[in-house]
Image (tube, rainbow over all chains, first blue to last red; front, top):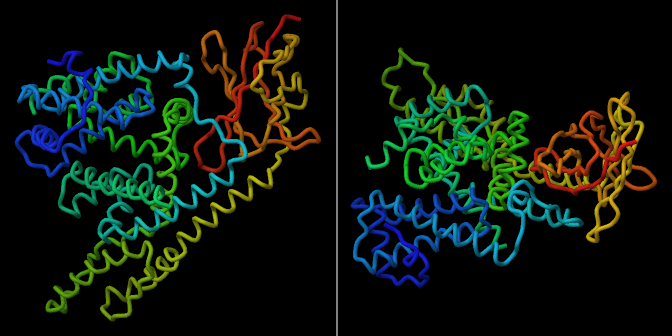
Length: 203
Length: 306
C-alpha cells in the first residue's frame, strides 16, 4: 500500500490537494476539518513518543505525502484513512532517524533517559515564563463560557478515589456518556492549552 | 470502522496498561501495536489522551506512586513537547484545585409552593452557572429566592477566593523565585557525616576522574558531597548510574543543599554494597515544589579496590 518512492517525495500542498485530503480523512462524514486536526495531533504525539524533536513537522510531512499520493492516484483504498496515515508515518519516522544519525551521531538510548538540562543563571527567565503562562491562563480562562469552566473544574479537580464517581455523576447530570464527557473535557483543556501557547508566543 | 477491531480485542486496554505505554514500559512489540492503535483507533486515541492528562495531573500534584514518578521523570519528561504539557498542567491543576467546586443542583422541594417550582429550578440552574463563573469574577447574589439565600454565604466566600486566585498564583510564583535566591540549607543527614569523596561539577573539558578507594566492607554507606555550580532548586536527588548497563541502580531521597565556605553542595550516602571497582556517575536532579525535576549535572568517579 505504501512504498518508499511515494513517501520520499516532498512537495507543497495546493488548496485542491488539501481539500481532497480533508474529504478523504472525513471518510464520508463532514467534520469541518476536525478529523484532519485529530489525525495530525495523533501523528504528532506518535512522533513525540518516539522522541523525535520535530514531531509537529513530521506530522505535517506525513499528511503532505498522503495528500500528494491521493492527488496522484485519485484514491486510496485503505480504511480507515488513519491506518494509511500511520503506515506513511512509519516511513517518515525511519527517514528522520536516519537523517539524525547522519547529522549527529549520538547514543539515543542515553538521550531518551535524560530530562531537561537546566539553564544556569536562567532562573529569572524561567520565572518570567511562568508569569507569562499565568497571565495567559488567566486570559484564556476568561474566554471560556461559564459552563465550560464548571465542567473542567468538576472534571479535573483533585479528589483521588472519588474521581471516577465524580465524573460519573457529572456525566449523569449533563445527560451524556462518560466517553462523551471525557472528550468534551479534553477538548476544553486542549483548547485552553493551545490558547495559552498562542498567547505566550505573542507576548 | 470495524477493520481495526481485531487489533483492539487482543490488546489490554485498562488505564494501567496505557500508563505503562506512555511511560515506555511496554515490551517493544506491544508498544509498536499501541503506536498504531494510538493513531488508527478512535477509542484507544481517546482513552490514551484522557489517561495521559490524568497521569500528568497526578505528577504535578505529587500523587504519583514513587516508581511511576521516577519513570515519569526519566522517560516522559525527556521530550520538550511533553515538558510543555507538564508545565501547563502545573498551572492548570492549581487553578482548578483552588477554584470552588460548582454547587450541586439543590434537591430541596418546596411542596407548599408548587407554583414557584419552575422559578426555583431556573434559580438553581443559574446558581450552577454562576458558581462556575466565579472562577475569575466576583459574583454577588442579592436576590431573595430562598435557595439563593441559603447558598449566599458559601458563594460569597468562594467569590473572595476566586477574586484572589490569580494573585495568589503570582504570589506563589514570586515566593518560589525568592526561595531560590535564599538558597535554603538543610541540616546534614545523619548518615552523611563522613564524606568519602567530594565531587565537583563536571566541566566541558574532560579532566581526571576522581577515584574512591573502596571503603572497608564494615562500612554500611559511603558519603558523597556533590558541589553545585548554583543552588537553584529547593531539593535534590542523586541517582547512581552504572555506565556498563546505563541503568540507575540507586536513588537518594530528595534533600536540600547545604551551604559551606566552598559553596552549596548536596550530601548523599550510597549503600556500600552497590559500589564495585568500576566507573560510576551520580546524576543529580533538582526540583522546586511540584515543578518537574531538572537534571542538574552528572558527577563521574571511579571505585578502585583498597
